[in-house]
Image (cartoon, rainbow, N blue to C red; front, side):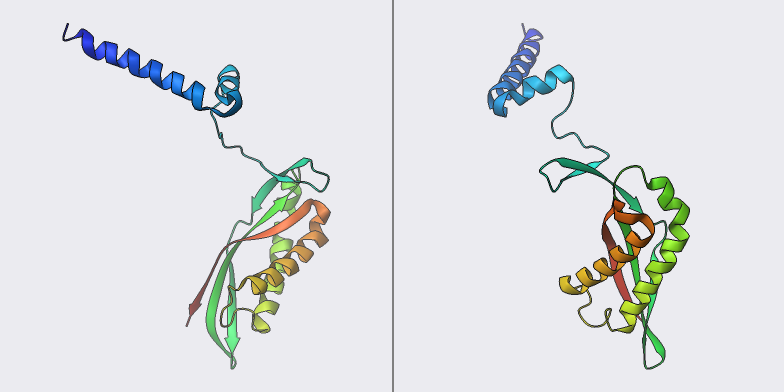
Amino acid sequence: MGKLLPIVFLVFGLAAGAGARILLSPSGEAEDLAEVGQKPNEDKKNKTKPGKDDQSETYEYLKLTKQFVVPVVSEDEISALVTMSLSLEVRPGIAEAFYEIEPKLRDRFLQVLFDHANIGGFDGAFTRSDNLTALRNALLEVARKDLGEDVSQVLIMSVSRQDT
């Protein structure tokens, strides 16, 4: 009898857990997922974002392979170095075209970043949202010159400043 008791508790616990899942799942979601064999909140490779006409549109995220290093010059000397990592939110299917022109795109992005540094964009509170929004918009404009309207956003993945 002593060896049978843990087995009874195990079976009872499994049955109670399954019953609780069925009772507590909203609108039969557990049953639908059990039929398909999926897990709730399963991660997907491509993310979706609502479109203009209430339809979901799928995007891919393309990371530029290397960080950008931007010198901040004041009084004819380098006073700091800013490093940034960027990604692009694009429509699916342009990854190959993106990687073919990445060197050209990096060059144009660097010019935008140098211009931003030269007007003082990396001085003081350089992470203010309005400051970064202006930078994102300038980078997006350059990206759309090469990749067209397939680029929906430029994402700043990381930014740091090291004073010298």
